[in-house]
Structure formats: C-alpha cells, structure tokens
Image 1 (cartoon, rainbow, N blue to C red):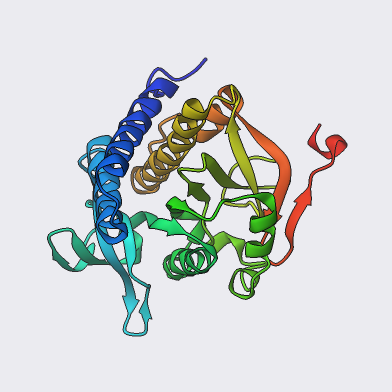
Image 2 (image 1 turned 90 degrees about the vertical axis):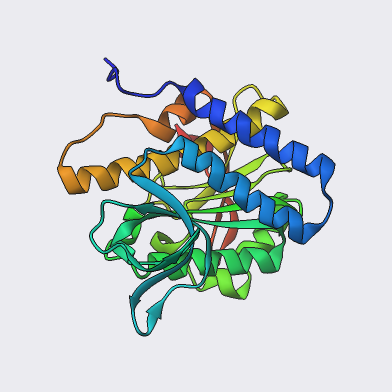
Length: 278
C-alpha cells in the first residue's frame, strides 16, 4: 500500500506546468539571449522556492571545500538551511556554500550547444567531486533552447574530448539533462534502465502519451521529483526518518517510457537489445 504522505503525480505536474507557462510567456515577450537567460534562472529559482519546504533555500554561487577546493560558479543551488555553518559568504541570492549543505545543483543554459554541453558537464562535476559522497548530490543541466538533441548530435557530443574524460567517473556527472524546447530529457540510468546515481548510461525519457505538452510536463516533473528526492535523502541522513515516496520511478512506471537507445561518455550511442530489456 502506498504511503499516504506520498505526493500524487499531479502535484509535481502542477509545478511543471507553472514553469512551462512562465517560460512560454517570456519567450513571447523577450528575444534578447542575455536577458532571457537571467529570467530563465529567476523563473526556476522562484518556482523552486515555492515548491520546496522552508528548510531548503535556492541560491547561486560556489561550493567551497578549502582554499584550493572551490567549484565553478553554479546557476542554481539547493541549500539545506539546517546544516551548521552552511555559508562561507552570502549576499542576497549569491552564496559561497560548504559542500555538506548542498543537496542539488543546476546549470541553466538559454542556448545549449556542444560547447555549452561540455561546460555544463564540467560545472556539475566541479560540485560533485567536492562532496564526500557525490551520489548524494543531484546534478541537473537545464537547456532552454539550442542545438537539436538528435541521436546523431548526442553521439558526437558524448564522444567529444571533455565529456570523454568522465568515462568511469559517471557518479560526478549530471543526473539529468533537459532540452526544454525540443521536449527532450536525458536521464542517467543503470544497466537495468532504472534512474539512479549508479547509472552510466543516458536514456531519453518520453511521456507514454507522446503528446508534446504532456511530454514537457512529464520531463519537468521528473526533474522536480529528483530534487525532492535529494532533499528527502538529506533529511533522512540527518534525522534517520525516511519518508516513503516513490519519486521519479513512479513517473517512469506510470507516465513515461525510456527509449532503448542510450548514450555514454566516451562511447556515444549504443542500444539495449530487446532481450536485455525484458
């Protein structure tokens, strides 16, 4: 029997649709890349602040683990305010944060192309590698627009020089990569096609209905569920009280499907055989 505290899928989708509406309105009103990029970041921060409990704040800035252990600048950080001495510095939305206080990091690109892909992978890795347990931090790349994420393009991107350096180090790479206007989401999965921190392969996740509007809502819902899951795991590590929520695997089972083609750093595209998938 499902835990009564578990959120309904519609709960995540309502916030996902709020994001979609705000992005679309901005797209219709403003066409300046720099201005749009600033507002894409602000829209995501604002919706996440309303989505998360007061225990978790949303910032931008750096992770600091020592004088020579500083991450690259990150567009969006989810910070546990209950962590002792969480901040080295903060001013408004900008902060320099200790690794143990961070539960999620997001890179936001208005235009996600090959170079932006390389940079985003490196930026997320720069945070995760400072964590005692990198799998405890959820890393997400959000691209609003950009190069079409066709299988051919992704095959080339995953085999580029910088992404190839992360072969065998997938635990410090993003858990999900979103191409918003292309209605495409890559999620990191294990050999059994289950979304999780032990994954080495990226699969495209589509809505089961294949309706474009539902696809983008489903994909954003997955990202929100990943962030909630990260916050709950942090809460459990601190309190040893586990909230039984099925999170993104619930979405995968009821609303979405993974494509058999997959992508790996250094290797590019490959396919899961039908027998392997059964």
